[in-house]
Length: 343
Ligand code: ASP
Image (cartoon, rainbow, N blue to C red; front, side):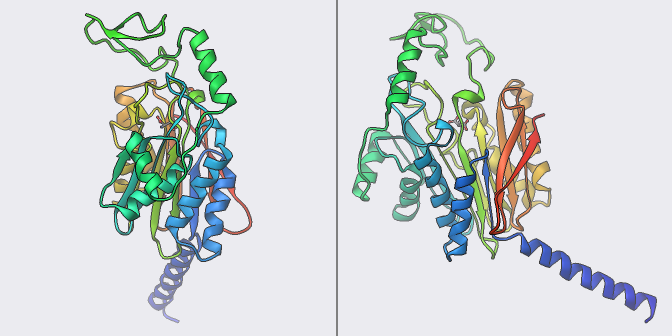
């Protein structure tokens, strides 16, 4: 066979192989942290003919029920008044529909309420007490989200003069005393996040991306947010482009970490757009956190990124995390854990 024909044939076979290989990684479920039961639950949805939206909802629900790390679902991380509230979102990268709930009270299945917002309303985000009212209308049952654990955390925090504390420029001094607080005459001053005692041990989120065998990308998050947050606080997790983002033909991403900082930079949106322009998931995740580091060199956070072909990567920042672990399932035999060292 003539050399040019041989090399043409070689590249033809190679391109078929590469295409096959890319497709062979789908479907895939990827989520933050070693929450492997959630990954498996999400992936099993595909094995029984469910959609990527079902995979993300059920995978995240599993973590809510199992109270992954104490940071997801009810029963942990109370706010300043001892109440547990939840944030969640789900995004369909085909229709670009989104449903989110912020500061959801008295309903434990936040991701399922977020899905209701996506599928049963024209809105994107419902919050607080009125999100609870919506959930009840949609058939969810109200219950107290606190537990012995959250009650104990709350009491210890009060005994410890309400530390860590997220108030600034108020009297009495929030570094020493509990409230009620009133604004003082201080001018704005910056404090490091470490000064405020925000480390990865007082928060976490499951952020999940599922891609079905046809490349349909869906992302979601669910969390009880930041331990001892100010009542009414909504973190990054239910904010589109911050907590997660999905877009068919590009990919999906999700974030975990210091949400008050991260939401200002929309890292999930950034990572997805970079993958859309051809960047690898690992580089896209890294590039999405670089602008945050520039302004907040001590923030703790991580981003997972999955492109529409099922390639994945992650990046993280902060000594509090050190090494970030995430879970991947792209075949029925087992969940794999991946690790990245934080920059
Ligand atoms: N990002 C979440 C929040 O700030 C917490 C976390 O993922 O660690 O509410």
